[in-house]
Length: 224
Image (cartoon, rainbow, N blue to C red; front, side, top):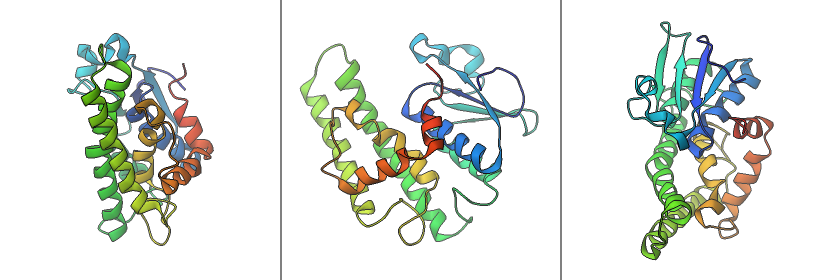
């Protein structure tokens, strides 16, 4: 639900890949543990995220951000991957979406989280900008960032060609590593990459995650 009530978990978000990471995981936690949360839509088109009250929550002036009123009367967390890790540590008590601290599986998950956070997010974000938003078409910039996004998809394909998920034993276990990456890759067409046919393992992974009811609910937040 959308609210500004200062209790429980309050997510500040908008309709972007980084915003959807947090809402997807909160929906997963809600279904798994009956964990309730609220959200406040932050219209980045109106620069709400740059207003002083929001800078007090996230000094970087970006969404998403989270305030946990269960923690010391209101503990703030910013950066999308940091929010996922915080929620996993605090609320995924049965490790349904994360792995035991210090385990090899946890290390694998962190590697793929950082790969997305340092690679796919920034590069595909630039592709989004130059393909969709730049006031003039700059072919060099479009090619540079679309090509790099495709290269990063090829790295995912190496991992997913014989696996179902990015981290975990065997064919993998659905986890925050997948939740952290999925919202970016699922928007491939927005970056000028019309299909995922070149990466069948990635395509199957996207379809697998998209079928989850909690993912569908998380993607729909905030309501338009």
